[in-house]
Length: 72
Figure 1 (cartoon, rainbow, N blue to C red):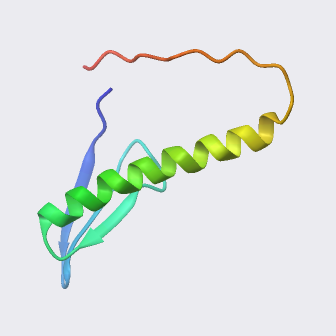
Figure 2 (figure 1 turned 180 degrees about the horizontal axis):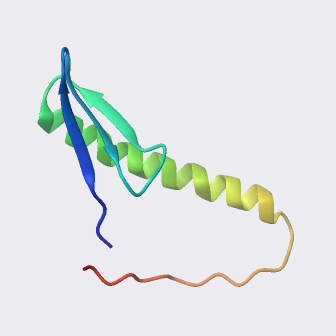
């Protein structure tokens, strides 16, 4: 899977987001720190989405399986 990170220089450093993943945003003083923070934000968004899915599913029977995406 390939995601697109977008960074922009602002007055106090950099802000960044992932085009394909709403809610994955970060900021930092340096571009290097912004990249690290954005990677952490992606993990947090995915974890939060998993929790929301668990709550929505509740005790319903579902089929879970790995999903592999081929990089472009």
